[in-house]
Image (cartoon, rainbow, N blue to C red; front, side, top):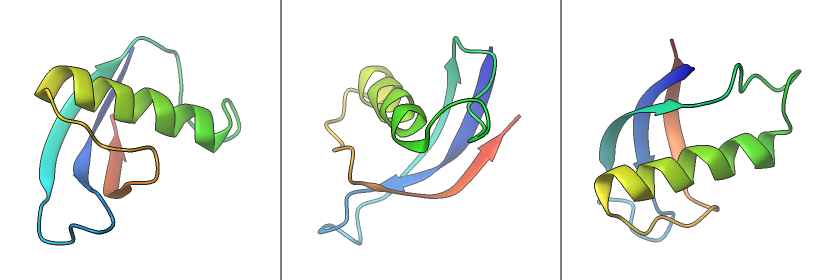
Length: 67
């Protein structure tokens, strides 16, 4: 299980940001273990599920922290 937290925002809506903290049921999301597009999809899907939002996969996540 990986804990991830940070801030997400859709690119056109620069002022609308969401601080998030989620858990992913995978051993690692580091780029040596999983392609970046795949880890981004997992993160965005879990944020949308937990917070009932509708962020796209082209959103901006910064900063991103992994516990």
